[in-house]
Length: 254
Image (tube, rainbow, N blue to C red):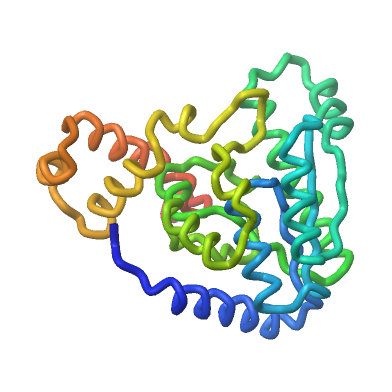
C-alpha cells in the first residue's frame, strides 16, 4: 500500500472540515454514528476540527444490537450531543406501502436511505452540514447505497482506503473494540462487509491501489501479490459494474 504521513493526513482533513463549515456558514455538522470504524473516525475528526458542541451524532438502528452500544460509546467518549432514533417504524411503514415484499437488498437500501433522510432533516432544521462516512474502498467498489450512505455534503474519508481509515482511527484514539470489530452495515442479522464484498479489505485495498492509483497491468498485480489473476479480475469487475454509482445522472446530448 501507499506510504502516508498520517499526522499530515489528519491535519488536512481537520482543516478541510473547518474550511467547509466556515464557507457554508453553518452551525456545525451532523454525523450518522453506526458503531463502526468509519463513522467513529469521522466523528472524531469532526470534533477535532470543530469542538464537541458543533457536532451532532445520530444513532439510527433498525435492530437493537451491540452496534447501538458501540455508537453510544463513540458519542459519549467525544462528549457530543446525540440522538437515538429507531428507523424500524419508518422502514416497516414504507414496506407495508409496497405491493410486494422487498428482498433483503431492497429492504437494506430502504433502511440506508431512511437514515439519510433523517440526517438531512436535522441538517436543515439546525443549519448543519451532513458529513458522510464512506471511504475509498467502498467508493471504488460501489459498496454503498446511491442516495443513501453515498449521499452527503462532504465525505472526509473518501480518499482513504479502509485499511488507512483503521490507521487514522488508532491515532485519533477511537475505542479499540470498534477498530477491531468486523465491519458491517447492520442491514440484516449476521451481515458483514467482507462477506458481501467477497474479499477481505486488506487484499481488496492492495489490489485497488495497484489497479486504480498505479494503473498496473492485472497480470503484474497478481504476480506481485502472489494471488490468482481471477482475484484481480473480480475486483476490476466490481469497479467497472458500479461506475454509474460514482456519477450524477446523465442524459443524451441534445
